Image (cartoon, rainbow, N blue to C red):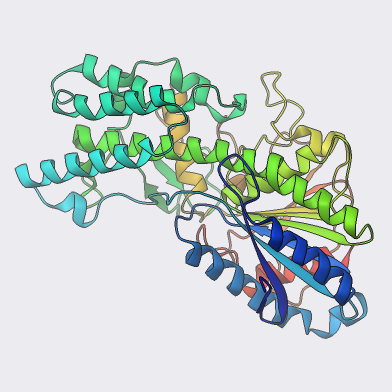
Length: 452
């Protein structure tokens, strides 16, 4: 049997390939049969983000379901959720690990050996990226990029060619104009790598968004690429051309995985939802996604707009997509990539999105994207940044957006219909990008289900 039990939930592993093809149709069939036999009222589909190990994803799901189970036993949920029966699908898709930080040991050793180590690390990154090539031509261009590593230190032309070869991995993908890729691709590679030599300072606390240089009183800062002597090791690492190439390759990995998550959500998970509803029409569907899994689930919801099938809720946990994703206009006449979700009223019940200034991935990756996409030396990925992320700032330029603090478990919510409810965990309730399985977050999700 494919069914597992995790904290008393019937749990099924749905595995998808990079094109969104379900690799385990027998597991979905068993889930459908179990839902019918057990009289399930609710199906929870939950998706991970940056992972390259199934055990990591399963750990996320297990911890999330563990604190959810604790919250479901609370007195205030007995009337609304007590009689319900659940089936849970863990979504497994071929994502890669994302390097959250640079520096430390790898940036603290000086001299030739350190430079060689950085070059070897970049070579390994390129070999790994080559596995994402969709055509022999793309794979050949990554091989060309590897060959250029011997020339990039002294040659801006070699840097231009290396970056151009790497970005060929994104040829033909469906682009989101609010994510900065077009602007990045319009620039020379040497210009992009030069931009990564300067520090990016990201506000992480207080009310200082927009300060740009961390000048507000009491404002904490994160030094992303670069280094000016204030962060041990970072200066030597990002002062190196190989350190800057490594950071650029990390961002490229993010763009590749961003596209893949959308394909899996739109092509694969949306079809699984339709199949579940066809077999059990009364089943309530709850979509939950962390990080790029949030983008996956937003893409699933967008796909469900036509023909319309309404999931009962959508919960985005530190989602890694543009903070203009649901906007009718990003300020430049461009609607967000997922605007149809709001316009077509796809989600029947609550749509909530956690965000936090303490997020260790969404804030920095959008700050780096903004630095490369624009001419703004003070790019910091905040709510005013044209390339900020919803997992750090909540939904921006979205008339349906409403924000409130993430509550501690036990403090009731009332979610207004037809809104994107931003739940701000910046006051230490969401301490980093992965801190989405704590009892305060799953209390919010239980509250979401209770209002369906």
